[in-house]
Length: 70
Image (cartoon, rainbow, N blue to C red):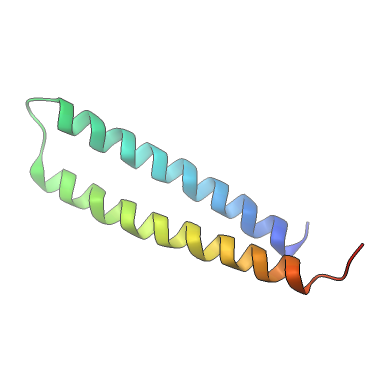
């Protein structure tokens, strides 16, 4: 597996985690018993995950650009 493929796989895994956190935040906001503290934690997690996804995509792009044409 190439470095670009590994970065893309990692980005997909991070996107899955991001989606799960977003879903939990949505459930919290829809419920009457939502925890403001947990919502704040989730917002922080979403920001961190989004940044990690961006970094992995940038790595994949750099790796793809550096790879010789097959």
